[in-house]
Length: 269
Image 1 (cartoon, rainbow, N blue to C red):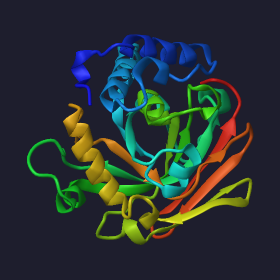
Image 2: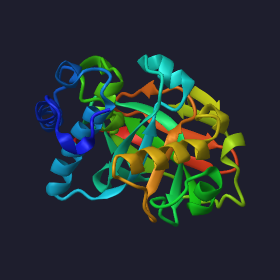
Image 3: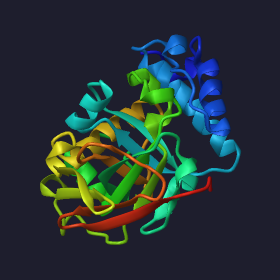
């Protein structure tokens, strides 16, 4: 793996390609021709440069997302391991608030459990018990995934570089502590316009959504971006993603946790 700070060949060009696609709202060619398919260090270096460009324009980091945790989603996209991306404040929406269709390129939706951290996961040993203790509460969430790469033609390096295909996220209003709610056994049902389109359980997310958070805590720390108190962690899909069209109404029900809803509207902001 290339070290993040080394700026390997192709990183700057790949970041520029993805930034141009986002700015022009026109999907681009994959970036694997610039950084290869196997160098995740180079891919995370691209991701960091794209994030730095966005924060330089005023966006604020509010958390992380874990991608590719569900076997169903891995099969959909032809990859075999998780990845992670950064959540920015301009990506977040409240329960019931519309998400403009044009704000996310090639949008697809998935239902997840989101955790809000009450403590850093930055120093010292990291295990499941420490992750559980660091979680302040959980809320139901929808992630509107998007790809700046045309036709979702992605390998692992493409999606890592493209901020783990992050687009927007919607957080539910109901909050539960882990004394009140067990993520691994939660049952999820997601509907679009009243029709069930995705089902799953917490166990479909790397066996346990908290195990996914542990993977993220270790991996993010390795690349110099540790998890911090107050941050939101989208722990990964509990079932398959589904494409979205303007006007779609999406609702996810997560047993023991609650419900989260959004409507896909028109416009760009």
